[in-house]
Each structure stands twice: as structure tokens, then as C-alpha cells.
Image (cartoon, rainbow, N blue to C red):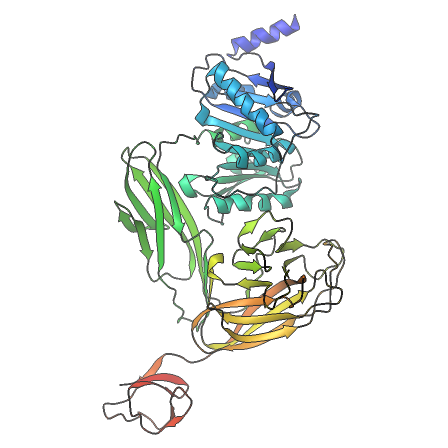
Amino acid sequence: MKHSIIIILLLIAGMMPVKADNINVNGTNRTYNVIVPNNLGENRPLLIFCHGYNQDANWMQNSEFKNETVSMEAVCDTAKFVCVFPNGIGKAWDTGGDRDINFIKAIIEKMVTLHKIDRNRVYLGGFSMGGMLTYNAINKMADQIAAFISCSGPSVITPKAGLRPIPLLHIQGTADNWSGVQPALNPWINHNGCSTTDKVINNYNGFSGAKLHIWGPGNDGVEVRLIELKDKGHWICKEKQVYTGKEIWNFCKKYSLNKTTPNVKITTPTTGAKYISYGPQNEVTFPDITITATADDPNGTVEKVEFYDGTTLLATCTEKPYTATLTAPTAAKHTLKAVATDNDGETSTASVEVTLQAPTATLSLSTAFKEGNALPAGWTTYDSSERRIGYSGGYSSGCRVLQFTGTSKGFDYGLYFRNISGNAHAGWAKYGLSDAGTTLSLAPGHYTLKYKICNWNMANFGQVEVCVEKRTGTSIANQTYMPNINIGNVASNNFSSPAQQTFEFDVTEQGDYVIAIYSAASSWSDCIVGQLSLTPNSYSTTGIGTTLNDKGEMINDHLLYDLQGRQVIRPIKDGIYIKNGKKIFVK
């Protein structure tokens, strides 16, 4: 009798009772729960949400998606979409293979057959291990899923080559493996071309325990979002202001695989590009930045692409190529946007963030050494076999940042690189190469580079060479150092702090330079570097300071030298000379 009353109440509320169902996938009977609203209609969305480890569909649905005022059933009923809670085998998921990917695909096909759901509006998410499964599915079935959600399930999976921009929502409590969240999101933020600086909304929805982080819009207008839940543990948030089921739907409903809005992508510069220029105060200038974009419309034509620096319109293009120039940029973070408008008046926005920096004091070159198993932006490595370019992540071996966890350690993070072949200069880490998106411009002057270096797995140690090179590869200064600390090939080992090394060098001409560190010329030599900083000590006086009169006479009696350092009494031809420490032009 009680069961019948529940069914009647569900019907009165407009909801069909939750149904348990099954499907055969590759010879295995798989089960799931499904919520189907009454009066669903055709071409409605589908949300598939997967439970955590040692849980099941009933637990996921009944324990974590219900509270006194809101339930997933109510969200489904209001928005009219189908929701499926699958069961994993042995209350677990295959988070790296295809077994459960095939299960999800089979669910989609069955929902299309039974309920005529819209294939272009299928969404996938999960809690804990189910969230890890969701990350696995991004690379394997992004052509079938419009948006992805992970709750308390960070992952080390990174985007595969050629993958479309991915809308991603992550929800996590700060008391629940919080340190793993940002490293999980960074590859997707970069893949989507989103700004690496997030927009933060405190007291999200009026809830003091929630903070919303938004990266984007990136390419094709997609966003990566993170709902940070202060002091929350490993559970689904069911607060009235931040109810997980409603947050999932509000995020997903914006995305469809058959989007009618234009596709737009900024191709140059890359997101996170950085221009660092040292020079005398008020004399530093930056090069013009060319912005290029691609745009098309899936159901019409692109009428125009507008380019912005923040809110300042730079250019409007009504035909290809879509390009604009940011002229005489100033030192600051610039958000560059491309807004595409189609023939229906619909728009999409892509944005990238570039940083123009003019350091007046010490600048850390290792600030980004804070994510294990990633290569930081600005850095490039080579081990005589593989070249890696930052930012990139998800590495489990080879050149990458290592996080050290010993009770005593010289630094928390260090960049590891190696030399497999043993050939000279065949294993290195370099900061400032063009492919890593950072330009390091140095004015003539005297500089100090500080660093700490040790070996990773070289009991007998291996000498390291630190160089300052022009971007063309020509060395202008170098220093060798023999480490006396070897960590021992295990990140949890204790090791003392390497001595701070100081490398002073002079730059004689303005240009783009690279900080290069080479491991020893022996097979499998290696190096761990950390705590690098660059300081300008003084600048040489540069520029045309004065000219001679029409008779070629010097204005004062200071000595005059040619560029070879030879004293000149009276110039006999036009050209550049040195007078009183300044370059002058004789005409």
C-alpha cells in the first residue's frame, strides 16, 4: 500500500517513478536506473551520471541527489530531460579503458530508441571514481557528449591531439584532495584556449561556503568552471543555494554538439603567451602583437569578426583573413578577444590572455614549478629523444616537474630533465624559446641569475652547464657547476637544500635571449633545477645621446671611440660612435 501511494504521488507531481533497467554490452548484462519525466516530448536532452567507488546507482540517486527541497527528479521534471544512473561492475569503473565507455555508448543508443532523445545534447558526469571515468570519456567520445562534469573526481588525463574545445564543470570541496584539482583542470584550460587567469565569484549564489571560478570563454565560446566548496569533504553538495543537480543542469544546458552559433578560435598568440622585457625604467617597449583567428558558421555564414583588447575595439574584419594588430602595447595583462557574428546575428567569443612584463627587480623563472608531472609554460626540454614544450601535462616519466614529499627537502618542486644519448648538449631545459610562448628580451646591462641544482639519479654526480644564449642558439655567457646532492630517484626521499648559485653575466646588445641548462655529456645524466631568478643589476647607457655639428666637431671635449674601441680624433665617415658611454650618430 505504501509503495502504491509513492507511485501515485510521483504521478501527481508529473514524474514517472524511477525505473531500474538493463542492457547487454559485449555479452555482459549491465544495469542502470533511469528517470523519465511525464510529457517528455521528443528531442530532449540526456544526462548520464556515474557513482563513485564502492557505491551504486541507488546510492548515487537517493543519497546524494536528494534533499528536503530539491531533487534530481525535480530538476529533470522542470527542465524535461532524461537522467540515467548506471551501475559499475563490482561497484567500480574502468577509468582508463573502453569497457565502461562502451556501456555509456549503449545507454545513449537505448535512450535514443526508447525516448527519442537529442543526440546533440547528451551530457556525462560522475562523482569520485565516476568523475575519473568522465575524464577518460572526454578523449574517447567527445563526438557524442556535449559537456562533461566531475564531482570530487580529479584526474591526470590530458587532452588528445585534435580534440575539440571541451566544456567542463568540476565541483570539489577544499577538504577533499583539493591540491589535485588545479593540475587536473590546467590541461583543459590550456586546450580550450581559455585565459589562465580565472574570474572568481565569491559567495556564489549567496552561499558563503561556495566560490565559482570561470576560465573562458575560450575557443568556440566554451568554459571551464570550478565550484569550490569551503571545507567540504568527499560528498555531493546539497545546499539550497548550490544544489549539485541544478548546477550540473545550468552548466550543461548551454552546450550542444550541433551548435548554431559561430565557431571561432584565436590561433595566435597562444593563451598564456608572455613577453618579458628588461630595460631602463620608462624606456622598455614591446613589439606589436598580431592577432589571428579562424571562424565559420555551422548553419550559415560569418558576417564579421571583431577583435578587442579588453573592451577596446581593435579591428573589424568582414572577410578572411581575420586578423588585427595590438600596436604599442603596454606592460600589463591583456585579454584579447575575437567575437564572431553570423548571418542570424548569433555570436561566439574566443579569448586569450597575454602578459607583457617589464621587471624592475628580481623575477622568478620558476614560479610555475608548482604542478607535478607537467612542463611549465615558458619552458622547453629535450632529452636527445623527445622534445617537450610547456605548458603541457599528464607526464608520468621523462622531463617534467617533480613534486618532492620528503619530511626534509631542498625545494617542494623541481624541473627534471635528462640526457639519454650522452652526447654533448643533448639533454637540456631552456626558458624563452619561441615554441613555449615566452619571449625574454634583455637590454644591454649586467645581470645576475641565481639557481639551485642537484642530481636526480646520479650517485657519482654529473656536471651541469648554465648558459645565456641568443634565441639563435649562440652562447654569450656560461657557467659550469658540479652538484653535490643526489636525490636518489625517489620523490619521497629526504634531501638537503642545494647551495644557492650565483651567475653574473653581461649583455652587450638588445635582443631576445634564452636561459639554457645542460646536463652532463654522459648517458642518462640528469638534473633537477629549482628556485631560478633573474635580476638586472645595471643597464648600459644606450641610444643616440647627441650628434656632431655640421662641421663634424664634437660638442664637448670628451673622447670619441669607434665601435671597435679605437679612439677617434675626428670622424672621417658617417656612422655610430661611442662618446661618454653613449652611442652617437655622426652625420
